[in-house]
Image (cartoon, rainbow, N blue to C red; front, top):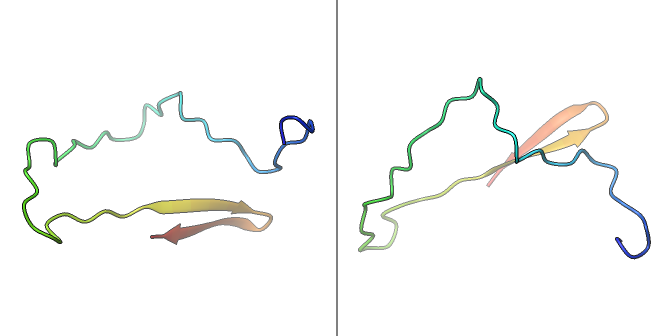
Length: 59
């Protein structure tokens, strides 16, 4: 896409500037030794901007 000179129409992520109003959560797995399956789990949420508002998908 870069070579063709085109770009996506969605909003770009602004990950370099921190929002001062948001709380920072501690990393709870730093000193944890994971020794068995299913000891820790992970989850992610994706926000998709659409014409009639944002949608979210949790994985």
